[in-house]
Image (cartoon, rainbow, N blue to C red; front, side, top):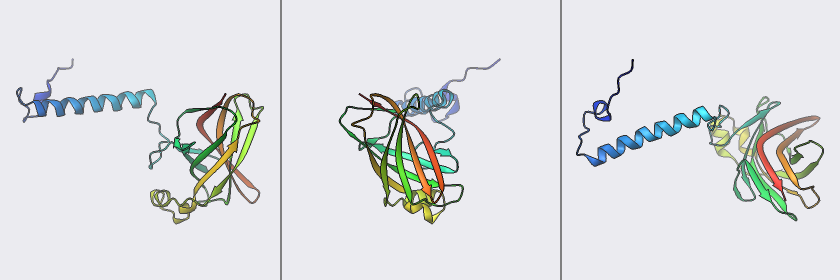
Length: 181
């Protein structure tokens, strides 16, 4: 049987009259509770990147989508036609520890029947990625690009980053979606 222990038994400096100590103890307990709830609910995923983004690894490709239309990437972004979707992030071939020269953004409808592709360009320097993964080549792993969605059918599309190096094509599904209205 477990014994209920009050906060002041854990902290010998805690006194019933010390508001600052009580407040800091409550904040610590609340923080632990929130972290525990996040872990249980799956909000903090095993694939959380050391840089803070959600990393997707498929076929050796590792990708992070930092921004959609200039704002932090969220699970679902709604856009109205006519529009161009802009994205920014980083992508590397982690299996071979290289940065493929070609990168594009692909939107795939939920039913898989519709695909809209847009060009992305390398050039955004990412020293944070190079340092985090201890690979100087990853400094060139940043990308930004756009997809014109004017002719796309309304609906939900998943976002994929596709990298090409010669005949090899690598793809990352990013667990992010676009809702075209």
